[in-house]
Structure formats: C-alpha cells, structure tokens
Image 1 (cartoon, helix red, strand yellow):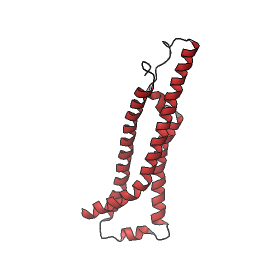
Image 2 (cartoon, rainbow, N blue to C red):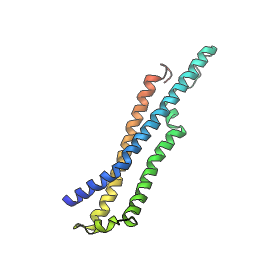
Image 3 (tube, helix red, strand yellow):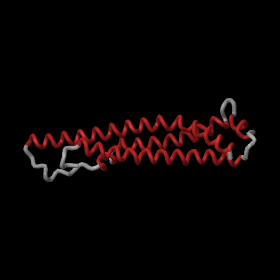
Length: 154
C-alpha cells in the first residue's frame, strides 16, 4: 500500500503542474466575465435613469447572466481540454518519448494494477478538484453580484 501511495503522489504532482495554472486562468477569465457583465448591467440601468425611463419592467440581474456568456463556457471547456491534453501528453511522453519512461515504471517492484489505478485515481481526484473549484467560483459570482449590482435589481 505504501508503494501505491508513493505512485499516487508522483502522478498527482505531475498532474497538478498542469491543473493548477489552468484553474488560475479559469478563475481570472470567470471573474473578468462576471465583472464585465455586472458593470454593463449597471451602466444600462444608469442610461435608463438618465433617459427618465421606468426601471420597473427591466429584468433583474441573475447569476445566469454571468454563466450564460460565451467566455464563461469557454473557460469551463478549457478545463476539459486540459484533461484531454494531459492524458495524450502523458501517454505520448511515457510510450514514445526519448527515454521511454513506461519501461522504468513497469519495472518497479509493484503490481501493474497499481499503476493503472493511480493514473485513474489522479484523473478522478483532478475532476473532483475542478468540480469543487467551479462550485466555489459559483459562490464568488453570487457575492460579486450582490455587492456590485445596484440594490433592488439583483
């Protein structure tokens, strides 16, 4: 079991080098999208007030206004693409790379099922980490909307 944990730690360190910068970029894109949507909504309300129009029939701002934008959806797609890129990148690097790492990995004195399980478990942990990250970002978008949208329109 100790060898399984060390293999898992090794694979997780390799995967986090790809995943953490991606999550940072995704956070930046999503916060940028949220701020642009909120500020454009507020400026639209200010224009309506300046023209003397009634704000009673103007739709209220929701988080769906943020999550429905194209840039927000592309940022989520970026996470999926990083998972796909990493799977092909590691496969290529281990089997067809210059120093075929898979031969050394298969020569380790451990069960080969541990190798398959660690690679699978890293993707499962990474997926859960990305899901938890998106769940946390949802609450950040909620708080940004409550703080920045004009009172009474959120």
